[in-house]
Image (cartoon, rainbow, N blue to C red; front, side, top):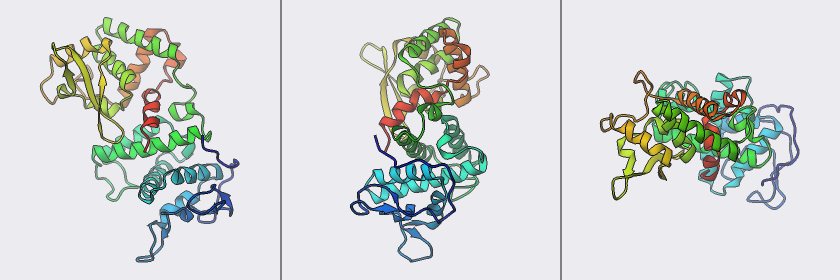
Length: 323
């Protein structure tokens, strides 16, 4: 676990963070401290053309305006990787997300963000709805680009959780905590009951979410080509895209096999396997509703079931694959 010195709540003026914010020993020199993100190796701010700066000065100023605890968390996360290129990517992505957050949800602090906020941000990026924090406002970002951004942001929140800067339940979904082994057992029981009621799409989606930790967007894009049988024709492997855009293979959980086979029988090549009853594509809200319905069907109390979010099932995956 990374130790973050002190804790504070008061905001800091832009570009004038308090001096001597210890970040620990490292490439700034033994026992060194930094008063600005721009003092971290590889993140020297660029204030004018050809001034040898390495990153936009506005990005540095934006992070330097954070409250002390959030600033220390961000600074320690940036220094976690020695590569200047990785630090620069992390700074750029976090600054872009912070600009969007302050415009879209001005009352939400950076360390209070939930998986729902990340989903909304990524959906807006894919739809071309971002007007801030992107080079070309209104232009949709490629799925691979969005996946990489999500991976970087997931890395930040996983680091913040490991460091004790945020509680896990604030990142995963307000007030729910992590899913216990008993919760997962009840959820799988609920999947079986949804399937018995003829709700094949919802049952298959929750079963896959439980087994793979895939993002809602990745599940929405599943097609026949992502299902792979083994010798004898039994469905055994499903491939999904992770937060980096890479293809990852998972064993198909036994409860999902007949459901996916039934869904695929009515799909042409390239058509999404998971669709709403009216044929429209599924999204994170549909998946969240399916998760709640499976939880209720399995016996999880209604108040808790309604607070569940798909991100809770993929938080461990995101943390394990953090850049």
